[in-house]
Length: 212
Image 1 (spheres, rainbow, N blue to C red):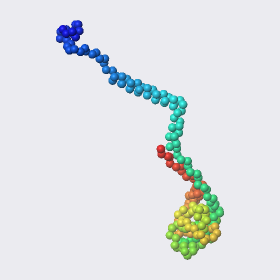
Image 2: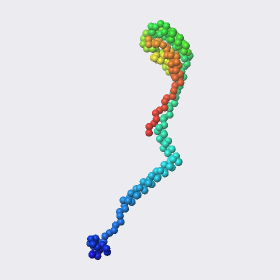
Image 3: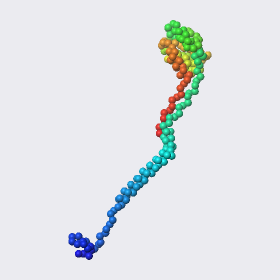
Image 4: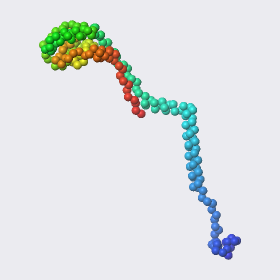
């Protein structure tokens, strides 16, 4: 038996050589690393949960919510367009002129306009420059100042008529020149609705929502 053989270790279990065996502890570095990662994860989850609770009870998300809402808040509707002062039918004088070959059409139309509250001026045939030369429903002709006042009001009675202005024309009266395509004035209910919308314009719709 060698001197390096501990007592009771005879037989086939013998220690030979001139070095003592080293008894090393089990490696625990891997377990320590895993435990450390687990601890960090747990602490992170706890910290996040704590912040959520704080936000709930203190309203910490109000600022961020307000910012997000700002992106989705639609822009303010633009201001209503400036109302144009339009004359009432009783303030509009209309000359009814017939440019067709149908007799009596001017007088019949003039009578209907009078029933609707308009003043009627001359009732006759159209001048040569328009006589039998108006293919459409008709022509509304007036001075330059009538483009956005009198002509729109008269246009509610004959929507398909062409509107023209003459800068050299004097006076406030306008002409309703009846064309070959004329089939009658607009129905009273339709004309009244068009006139009501004309005198009370709606505000423009709101702008689309902003995108974040």
